[in-house]
Image 1 (tube, rainbow, N blue to C red):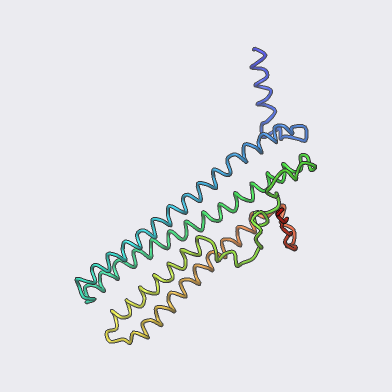
Image 2 (cartoon, rainbow, N blue to C red):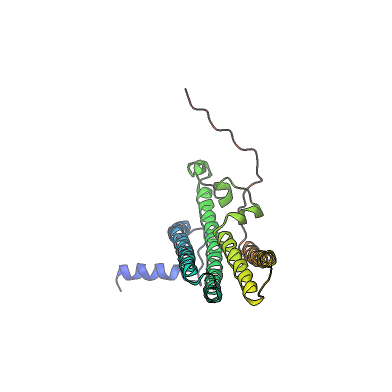
Length: 242
């Protein structure tokens, strides 16, 4: 057996699960960290691309359907056939919105997990030589600190799943109002509007509750090992020279 094969066999045997890496394998750990750090941004880009593609598909289908409904309304004069056509199209769009919301929410949770993994690796880099930690512009503490944001429940209002949830609520309310107007002839428009608004609000609340539940489970399962410090005063910006 040649020396090269002996060396390769020794390296393979040194990193088997039966022989975990210890403190003396710092180079191997650093290599594993850099490899993982290289793959995590790619995984985040995939989740963002998937969310944008699904949301664009949903919004494109919704806008084109609304244009088609406007053209049909001009021909059918808002008669019974038009209501039947609307009640056929809107539920299909609502189903597409629901599955889009669920997938976009899962992508958001997955993206946060990847961000926390990157922060852990970045924190490991700063522990190698703490005197050089100031060369890292992004902190290894938390993603919110890097973006100068507070860790608050209000951040859920600005996510992509929340935007899809609002659209689904509006679509569900409009579908319920039109269904009531078609089922109960002669119903007051105000009553149909109130019923539609109530149904749409209920759907929106269910979306938000589902989102909060998933984010809470994620924060419990994947805790932040190096959380951001308490929010302090905002540092003053240096003045530019005249």
